[in-house]
Length: 511
Image (cartoon, rainbow, N blue to C red; front, side, top):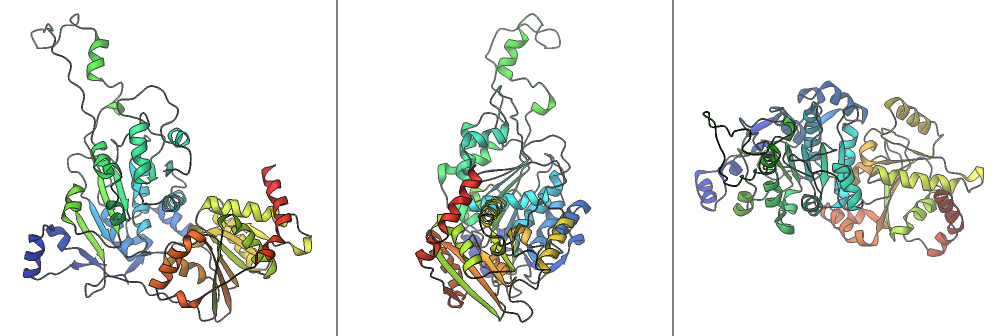
């Protein structure tokens, strides 16, 4: 439930105001991190509730139950009579803040008729862009909404084609092939300056996730330029000419050619081309929301509302992490190109059966599954590992059937991304492999907690690329968990034994 406004003494308020901190930031609506509610309590549509259930969600976390109803108060796609108030949300990492904006944005935009770029989500890294896009993809199923990512993982020309289509005539109001764009500041700036017809003038939502990190980035003054780009372009004034006017003050028909007049006034062809006044709602999400007056002023917030997930005593909400008693945890540091070999080694040399393998994205899941399946086809039948891809492309009935086969011992390894992995509820998992390093501790705990259930023994292996080792150890250290993980060193000769069949598998894929 939404709690009362945070209390400050008169002296504290006076001091903080004198420092330039706005009053709304001193009085957040406080939400207890222990709160939760059913999916039907937040005002979501029945279709979206069904979609949540399909991916294994049965309830909403504190930040979701607090933010979603506020989102849904204003569902109009375009309303300049009263521009929606902006939202600033402070919630700890791993509290479910991504779904707090994904669900209401999908719900509101699903009612649109014309495809326009109406939601932009800005994130600090490519990997976060991939993860958030996957989350949107899972929840736009069954709607006509189109989601795109622009972070430099595809060529610029490919992104341009996905966003606006082929190059051609310029449109006064721009055009778009997508409704929702997930991007980084730099890539968004690139498209604003170099992609014809790309426009933010129809934007309804601007989400700045990991806000404190992003506000510290000064790339080409990205935030000011983006906010400026959301304003409709002003039509140029026609030059002062000696026109003839009739009695009503209208230019006489023969005074000037319509085509000449249109070249100055950019007259619209349809009402879709008419310039609009901005109706944008800005949404900031951060674990620690900035109180820097200069940065706050630069956001140009409109009637902001501040929601903070914190304990009853006002202290920052922090998660406590626990793992099953029978769990043994390992990490192994290896080069990026050796990770598939490492998975194969664990499967065959260490006899892993009844396992789950988590990846960071749908694409990563598909690539790894294709490679392992090709490798297994090179092995004698009695030694083959039976592997399946547990994908969002499967309908609920197919997923249920696959989990049944896993329980019956007919599948040795399921490969899945974190999002779709939410729907997996199995007591028989003996091994968990994290193919991609989880960025947050809660995600790590979510993965490894799938094994060693109900008093059983279980093992968890995390494959860490060399450039990721420092970050991964830091999140473990911060959570007081580093000492519980042993480093597994595998001799290079052990992996070399697998290379001939691995190369055969690679050649099969590329044929």
